[in-house]
Image (cartoon, rainbow, N blue to C red; front, side, top):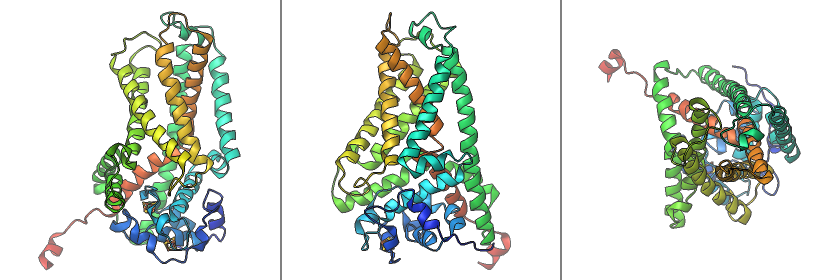
Length: 391
Ligand code: SF4
Ligand code: SF4
């Protein structure tokens, strides 16, 4: 495969955040960051190798690299870089750049490059969903008074279309990354075994759901820096955000599929209970993240971009309004405030889903895929009879 050099690659990545107080251009490739990275031990490459790709303009290699996504942004490398080049910040910016390149709509590029672009995309979706939800008030569910204000069928129909569009957009992004990875491996003469795909997917899902590598990273850091209560460790907090979010998503999806929207259910109804517990767990995790960002301190919380704030704040507002809805949706005569909270929650939840493949939130998808691609690349080759005989 011919090597194509993009001389402006580093500049483009810098627009996604790699710059500011610390600048990755100062990197002189000493490799200290890779040596201290608790997660690079099994590959020996990142973050130094990924930085090098950007320095010499190897965009194709950078976008095809699964290493970009196997970094968990712990900040260890930034704290020990002798040139103050902020390798952790660079990795985050390069992931943001990759999300923009994988997205076909162009909205990710707008949302990730600047705070203004991010706000514009958010306002676009918020306005769109607000108008759609407000434009049909003719039918409702008499069982719950609040659904006379915002018809359940209308929420349902918009939700189904939204999930389909977002699902397609995310699928195309994942396909783009897989294709780049696959062709790069082939050009290097690496033979990937199709029969290893199921095992690689299983391994990636297990790792993503249990945060196995994240916990290993955490344990290494704890061993170096001293003890920290388990409930404040980064992997516990990240696990709380992710599992809480997944529980809420599952509860909402099952709710759409299994019962008429707006029909009254008791507090112990399984889906309502799942959503409530998921909401509380997620609220805990996202609150810790926001407090850490507000306090600053050591990397990765020492400097936060708009995108670093945007996603947790959006998630926080969605969860809080959702928990408040648990109260107002069952009031016999909802107030204007109750209607407002309910409306805000539905719009924010739709914003969150719509912006998932476009923002930092997309790392959930790309990281899981990267873990599968890594497992696939490292799947043991089949030992043939002739090889066994030679051994
Ligand atoms: S980012 Fe820092 S630690 Fe890593 S290779 Fe460059 S100068 Fe060395
Ligand atoms: S931020 Fe942490 S996981 Fe990522 S490259 Fe640096 S040390 Fe490794």
